Amino acid sequence: MKKNFLNLGNQPIANSFLSSISRSSLKKEYFYKLIICFNTKNFLVSVKDPVNPKIQYTDQYAHRASESQTMREAFRKIAIKLQKRFKPKKVMEIGSNDGVFLKNFPKKKVVAVEPCKNLANLTKKKFKTYPFFWNKKLSKKILNENSKIDLIFSSNTISHIPNLKETFQAIYDILSNKGVLVIEDPSLSSIIKINSYDQFYDEHVYVFSALSIKNIVEEFNLKLFDIEKISNHGGSLRYYVCKQEKNYKLSSRLKKILKDETKLGLNNFKTFKKFANRVYKSKKKLVALLKRLKKENKKIISYGATYKSTTVFNYCKIGTEYFSYITDTTKNKQGKFTPGMHIPILPPEKGFNESVDYAYLGAWNFKKEIMKKEKKFIKRGGKFITHVPDVRIV
Ligand code: TYD
Image (cartoon, protein in one colour):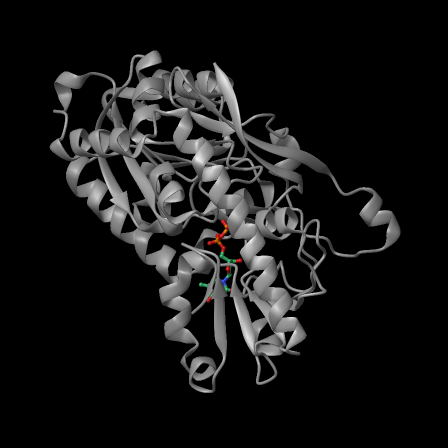
């Protein structure tokens, strides 16, 4: 049974940055109710009413995985590691974005699946790219044109696809018998531990745990056999899934993580009710802090126009009365306005200057990288604000 535990209010599509805030463009802005629920049977946490993917993954899709040094390095390292461990002859990525992972493999070995046409266009000259949504029809088409796949990699994508049944059946069909599926997604235990409720937005239809992934893949004759904790996106899990357990032994680290998640209560509705209460308190505290700083006439901006911050701004109802603007390095976000709260986005070279007193870390998941980069700001007395793991000035 699915039980609701968190209501994050009316939210826009996190990726729908606006080019203009004229009355006619605001009239077209799409909002949906972001309610999060828990399935008491398979322990899966999900958005109650997912948005139609055709509205989300368009040829205007803004996120570029190569944008951060941290992520470029993370994808390079995992590509090398998987090549060494599984020695795949054929590799496929579901949600290949701008090719940041696949570029680490020989061209001939790889197949890219990416429904956002602007991103697929970036990789199609380099690798075989299928610019479509992942489903059984596509799996069949790829199988007709290629051999079976030995390694399927999917980072921050499976959790975005509402139809899990179709997703895993399509994976089962195309995976070679000894093949391995590797999934990376934000981890539910990290979210609960560090109160990062902003991991909930339209694209994150599911927030997986080892407990829920184990239950789900078993429904489709697949087995979770290994797992790794990774630091990506403020705490993620990398799941290793195969067709038959006999090919791969269950790892002791998987057993440990399953045990830890049970201890944390990720199989218990009560845990999520308590979390929702902490989220509400976090909102109150953030608004109070911003109000106080504004009263003191401080200039506050936000650092990183992330999808995550869209959840925070719209849930807390904080916009240009607090933030003068947001700075972001992504070219196609610059000059636009954030979804819902319509905060202008500037390139850092125009906005991250002497006039700024406080910068809210929209991209808190890159805190280390940002702190290193912005030593000058910190030295001259500039301060960062974060809400993770609790609201405070850093
Ligand atoms: P990301 O981590 O992908 O978060 P989300 O999935 O919630 O959107 O986005 C990070 C954003 O922050 C991205 O738009 C790039 C921006 N950014 C900066 O502007 N400066 C930086 O130094 C870093 C690391 C990121």
